[in-house]
Length: 495
Image (cartoon, rainbow, N blue to C red; front, side, top):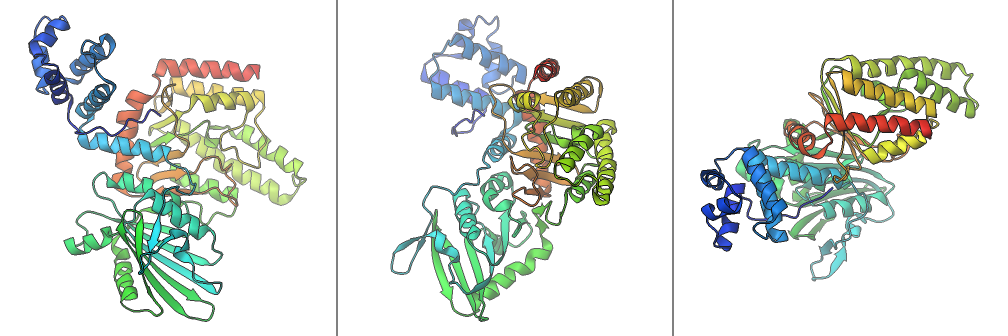
């Protein structure tokens, strides 16, 4: 993805172009003559932000192609950003940029920047010691306000990963304005943990004083040892990435403050739900997916073909052959499970292609080419064999037919110059936005995790980004998409 650097000030196209002209002592009339405009009024209207999107775009294209003003690289970036702000408005521009960063920033690796604890004597210690309470630790409960910093969250998650005790994490996250998207991006290292729950602190929900409390950057830890001893500590961020610890050997004012905060949970919306927290098998998982998808509009970014787009007869062959390989194909339990799975999968398949609510799917062409050549999806279910040549031709042919003839089913590919996000994300309108870590092979007993973001403003921001930015500017048009699908079918046949 071609990420633009932050360019300030954030102004619209007319004032931005006016500043560039003033630097060169070029008047609007001179620019009109340089561009061979019949009327200089067109330039005046654009500079006064009165021109339409098409007029601005045409002028921008000429300036970039003909290089009449000898624009520097910085000026090109500023003008490009200003054009986008004029097209969608400043709030939507900020939301779209934050959404792009969220979709690309899914690395679960420990942040490299130093995050430290500042002791009373001035010594700095790594934040990795945040949760060190000795070998007799039995239980750890963590409450976080603010701290929506990617590096801090990554360090916390890394520290928690080394523990073998019961843990619970309650995080209060401010969701006002464009901060909801930026904050979600920051908390991703914690977001997929099953012991982590985030709560939305919405604008106007509390008094100004309490709102400030929830926006303070503080980590509160309660620890319980095997001997029954209770310890507590608050870590207050005194500078970016620097925390000052306040430790107590018994519960006191800190715990009362924590109790006050936790009492407000009943008024808050859970920011996420662990979509697979109670799943014990693949059948239960697919049933939950079916409920989420049923009769809803869907706006999905997926690397390649989702399993719900695979016909049941093909899926049944993959399951049966995998069961035969494991020597369990003849068991009554497997036969019964396959029948149930086929019933559920039929409903999912029909729902996507027969409902009248719109379904939008944006694929990575590179990942789809890999699927056509190998028969393996990016998140190929770990217990399934790869699809045969005949099977993948059938899957792609059906997808192509639906893309051309089904008015409710829309398929697109990212443009070549736009790097496809590695993560999976889908808005199921009215239910929430499902985000999933990539490349987990849907091993439900392994590292496959998803989270359902139910916060309405985030869902609306994602939909706006998907329809107004992604679909309008970053994907192939319908004709080129159909041609690409034809090429994929031929590629699969030759594999």
